[in-house]
Length: 576
Image (cartoon, rainbow, N blue to C red; front, side, top):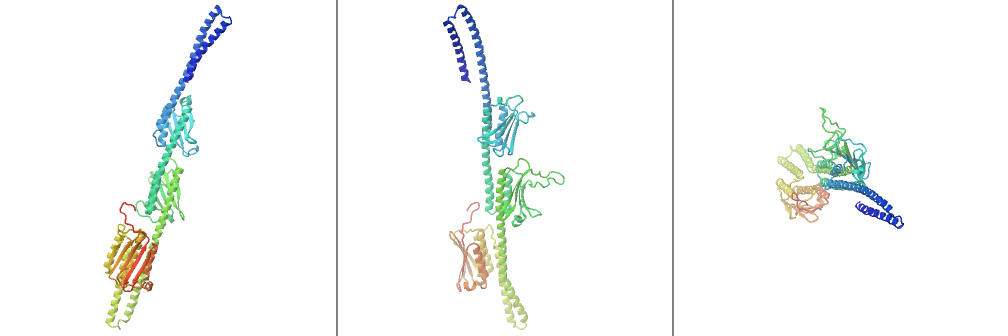
């Protein structure tokens, strides 16, 4: 506009002077110039100059007014754009960006009301929206139709719409120009997209921490109750819900072992189990107490996902909100991931419970066979001999009767020692969690020596305390107990040594006595065949072997090897 003003201000006066001089020249050259014409020409010239000055001044004023209005409009647009830019600068959340934008528009663009609607699904105008509104003058009602309604677009993506209301008779374009409006909406849309991207990254990070915590609990085989409680709490916190619940089918609830405690699941009459936290998620439940007062508000929005396992559905995980917006697709996706983790945790808990039940059954079977092979046979033999003695003692010499009674007493004493040793083995078969494997073995050998009278010694040839998996340690202690029982019963030994050795791939336990020994080929199916079978069976469960080296008159050496490296026990707070 300044170039236009300069051009008009120079060209018009020059053009007027040139035209007047050309007219006078023509009149003089053609002989029309005379004293009378000269007077008339001077008058005409004065009138033309005055008229030209007036027209030129009016034209220049018009140009100056237009230029001034344009400058004012540009300044207003720049002010609005700068106000919006300053309001959203440094803001990291969508709500703070929108609040700053609305405030800047109302103050700088002169709108009486402004509204921004954000689409939950970018580019989908018919999707759910989040609406933010700011009214400049409270109580001033605006019509349903805004003065301006433009999309918030950045590139090819529309994230929402901006609407503004102006008083009647006000042209919106006079308050904010089209180019400024376009720049403003693009800037706001870009800021919203960036804030949503940052929020999405933060949410992924937080969700990742939650999933890591749950997976760590599952991989460590934590008890079922704390795992389910952690999943329910993560679901409630991460999805901004007021309550969360994990409901297990009756079949699932009966196949999983729940630990007692304040957070233990609630067992319903229909057999289902519910692990819940926060507001009750069952919308059908009454939210009024007996006195009519409200106990818990009923949820307005819920989302559920089925918990599945290899054999089918195991239950359901549900979250609920008392107020606010409904759960988004992203929320449902995270809930689906939590449902998968619950399925993994429950499947692992079912397998552990099944393994525990099998172990109990196997131990009961072993005890039954031991009682049959030892105590039952002894009682049966004692019963028959007592019956025979009762029928013939009157005709037998007194010394023979006394000898038979002493023999029966010795048999009963031996059976009593067997029962005591079985009780000792059952009581100490489960290690103390605070003790190492070596400590548990030493404690058992001390009791064994006290009860049997056989000196028992433990020798560690590894160089450090031995630590194996809990499953391996339990089975190995039972194998050592079984071998020591055979030493007491049959070896007639005065001492026995238990040696521990290891390599990078295996750990070995050697039980060696100084007794009479035996022939392994002929004795394996004789009086203690079941004991040897039990040792081999337990070692086979660990992928290990049992080797027996014995010769009559030289003692016996039993070597048990399992394919586990003898790690040093971990200190508290350290990692292996």
